[in-house]
Image (cartoon, rainbow, N blue to C red; front, side, top):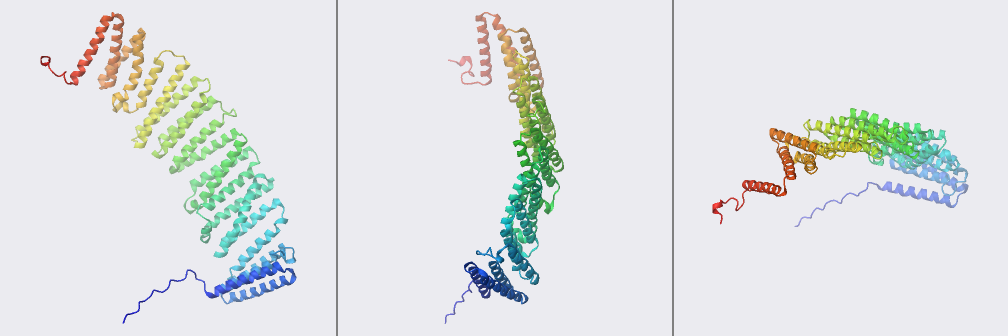
Length: 603
């Protein structure tokens, strides 16, 4: 006989409700809905009396269920009593009745709070008291002056946050959810009042907005509220934004000095928090402090820019550089950001001092060059990750200094600024090269050699133009020196044609050509002496490019002078002979078909 196949038990239902709980829920919905219909359709004293009687009966049964520890029954009955009492107090068009005013709803809130003291195990009573209190405030808002509504909104929000912090789990979550609209309305209207209201209301609104923001941050400390507050940084950042906006608005009407100090306070708040906070406080308070500081500083800067307060803005940037430098000294990990920010603040302060006449363009250019020199000197001693951003920020100072002087007829100042910048750049590149650089440092150093060479060449050309120099050497020799400097350490160990060759050719070719063509005796003597020096130095140091350039310059001068004094047939013979000598030497060194065969074997 075949055995029956065992079947698996059916999977459990995805819900945990029991039949009594379903009955309770349906009954409560029907009862409250019927009460709302009665209050809406019939109204009058008998209807309200009936609803209150039903609410009292439901309350009595809820208290008995609480004593009997019937958890579901006590909560559902308490919720039913709440719905019936609220319906009787004015919902559905009974707002003008005796029980439909603010006082009646407030009295319900007190009654529900007393019931919570009588039956503390019932979670519906404190929640009902909080909802009735909110309803009372809503009904009374029309009678509150417009200038005080912000205080009402923020007061309700703070009360709700307090309940969320200390109430039981579900009450806390419900309180936080119902507080959110009050909080948003309060901080929006409070911030607006802080910017536009009278003096006393400004300060009071700003204080309440800050307290509301802090209350929102504190809710992150309760684990049961974390799912409702979003990502870990969302609540602190939101609180910081509204607090910073309110504080800045409250201080904005006090004048330019107050706006400047407010912006600086934001900088200090952000920098001190980043420098000192650690552990769980850093995760909770740092986003709040950074958001508050950034908003305060940004709004203060915007206000100064709108009012064209350039000197105050420059002072704010100058003050900002001080804590930034301090953070860079205290926190090595933050140097890739803090050092460039400090350099940028100093440069911005110098530039903003020009429009109001605090500094002349020339003085500002000199000051920017000093900032550039200091930044390059400090950056050379930093780690690899901090050198590049520091060099980029310093480069901005150098460019700004040059742009300040270009439109002005001050060639000597521009030349001096470029010369100082070039020396600082080359000193920075030399120091990096001599400290066993990494691959990134080596690349950065090579770029610095080129930049420093360009700066020095530019300085030399500017000074040459200032003295109206007409000799070609005033332009070719600085360019040649710049090409040699751009090669950097490659002059000592690289290919001579790649490193020495371009610079020597730029120095030798123009002067050699003019020595021959113009028959300039002093230039000819100088070219021959320079060629002799190159020949001796190249031979002594075994450098091919100097030796070849020196020899070529001397031969070109000699042949050129000889060609000018001899008749053209003799000159032609000399040229043809030289060409034949060159071709013969080349073919002997690199023989090809025909040239390697003896003359006797030729046909």
